[in-house]
Length: 181
Image (cartoon, rainbow, N blue to C red; front, side):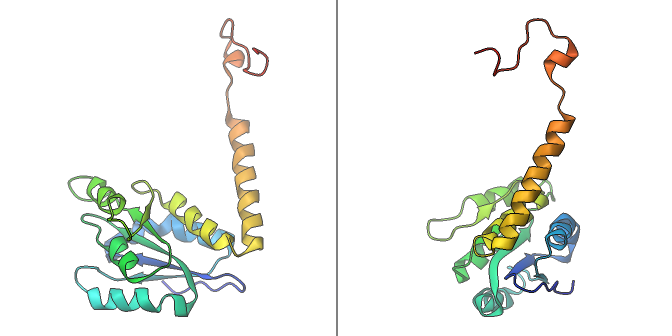
């Protein structure tokens, strides 16, 4: 995938452990595009190309990367190895794959030793992984922070519109919590 450029926003580095992980990042890319942030996507195996991975991690700050999203399944060494080589935040996105359905990847990312942090989302939680990356970038980008607040408010409105309250279902004795006090 070609880098997505947008003026004024630091770059988000997305690293996949394998080309088989492309499907797992479709929602990530869609959210980054929706918010207009720039990012790049690289495929680097922690096991097969460790020297390339090291170089990517060490050079990321020079390229303007503010946060790295590491997408991996199975043993999922990728996020931990990236974290070992950089002081940038690394967010791990475990991919649902293999005989354990991504649980092995989740545990690999969540059980890092002290000093090598990886913030980890749920298995296949691409949207949350993307939003975590955006929140990191928003720490230094007020415009992005405003867009995230608007996004959250929109989600709240949509959620409220879909809610069905027990009183509307005719449940006897039910009162909204603010009326029952």
